[in-house]
Length: 183
Image (cartoon, rainbow, N blue to C red; front, side, top):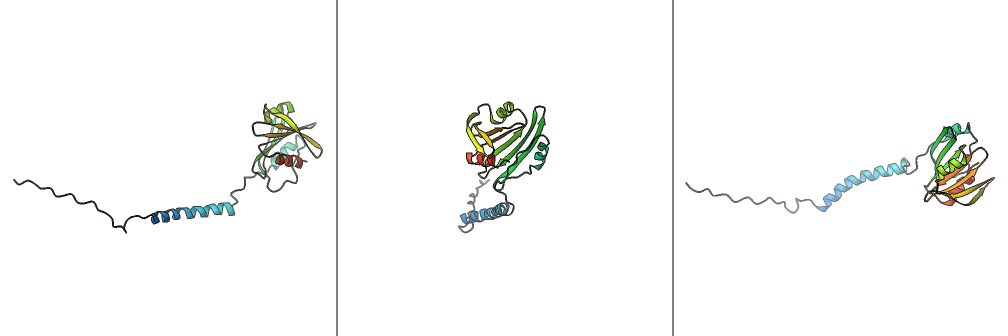
C-alpha cells in the first residue's frame, strides 16, 4: 500500500489592502451615533429648558401654615430664585413650614417658620454645633447669624408666635437677600 501524502495546508486568506477596515470607517460609525445624541441634547436644553431646576408651587403648604401662624413670604426676589420644595407639618409640639429655595448661584437655602419652641427647633435645624457669629438687620427684624453644620450658615429670628430660620450652604449675600425679602 502506498503511503498517503498529506496535502499542504492552504495559506490563510488575506484581504487586499483596499478591502480591510480603515480608521475613516470608525469615524463614520461614531458620527452616526454622536449626531443624534447631540441633537437630542440641544433639543432638551434649548426647547425643554432642561437646565432649569424643578420648581414647586408652595401655595398649598403656605395656606395650611397660615391657619396656624402668620407666614412671612419673600417679596421682590429676582427670577433666578426657585422654590424647590414646600412642606407643612403639624405635630403636638407645634406647626412647621419648610420651603426649600435655590438661589441664583444654584445653592440651596431652607426657610423654616415654626411655632415649635426655639430651644427645640434651632438645634434640630442648625445642628448642635451651631455658634452665634453676629447679627444682620433687615427692615424691622434683627437676625442672629450662626454657623451651622460644616459649610452652613443660619439666620434666626424669634418672634412672639413663631421662629424663622434660614439655613443654607451659600454666600452670605444670598442669605441676606432672602432675609431682607421676607415680609
